[in-house]
Image (cartoon, rainbow, N blue to C red; front, side, top):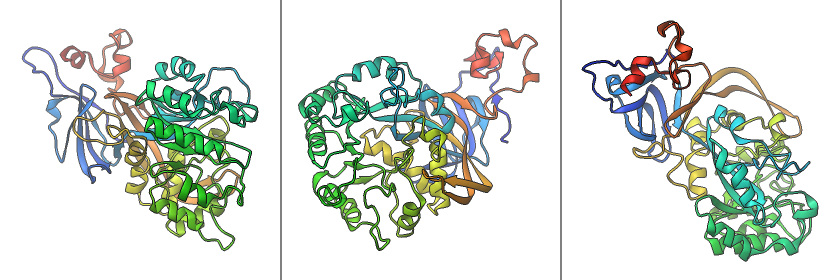
Length: 429
């Protein structure tokens, strides 16, 4: 475990500190700035204030020693389902969704994009009940279906797919609605994809496609990614095995290589039924790695092979993807894919969302969505998460003072139990 946090002194003669929080001695991985080295990271007023080989602890109100740990931007998961609270059974706009804060911060995730749980008619409800009330930053892909992701009876209604209406709602929430989603369509028509792309074009945002039922003749995957989608659009569930991602010869579908060449994004979207070792292993052996790593978090996947973002990232670590690239595909890559370049990096002045991670070494088992296991020797664990400059998760209390250093009535001293500062340090602040 990393050493305990140190607080700055207070009292007469003390001067204001430059930094609110200093993370000292960790291995920083920041893909945007091409940093992978031991660095100190300072935070002030919710922003990254400095990243340097050595910063003075005396300049910080609180210093946390993160030696031996990895310091990365807050993780960005662009495929989740968090429109809980509607009360609808077996619906991703309902009981299949989870409240985000219980499943994100503890895994180092500070930003998520809900993948189409809401549509044009219920987005405002989603915003009111979930987005506006969550500590996690919740963005959204708007479903091309006006009713949202409420099951086959809704998701297969072509007359509820209105590109103009979807685009108008998206344009009314710039930066919050970051894309259009089409998913689970059971018919052979291209209409949902074409309408989603029309809406995305009108609103100038990307489209994410869960391709639905496989029709290899009427609706081949190769045609989707080489003709129907635009550069910057996202094909999720890229290791599902459900839509001919591998050919009968065991080779990656040539259309996927061609789609990548023209700029289509390939996202993991693990989920409860969309990641299998018999696809992922040969595909990655052929160097077809994902552009972004995401969970497809919902009540089924979190209790199955997916579990959480770090578990999915760990799978790619044991498949042979270097840690720096695993981090890039979980931070800077997805931030750019959803046009939020202010996220997923540790640039000075950027939002201070930070994940402090540990790489465990031992014997670990990873299951796919059918329950098949692959053994690995590495596993990622979240030690601490910082959101907007504040510690919001701390596995081993490394940001907190040791209890013997506090006064006998420390439970009654302001809100020290929440910010972890000694009374002297809080007085200075």
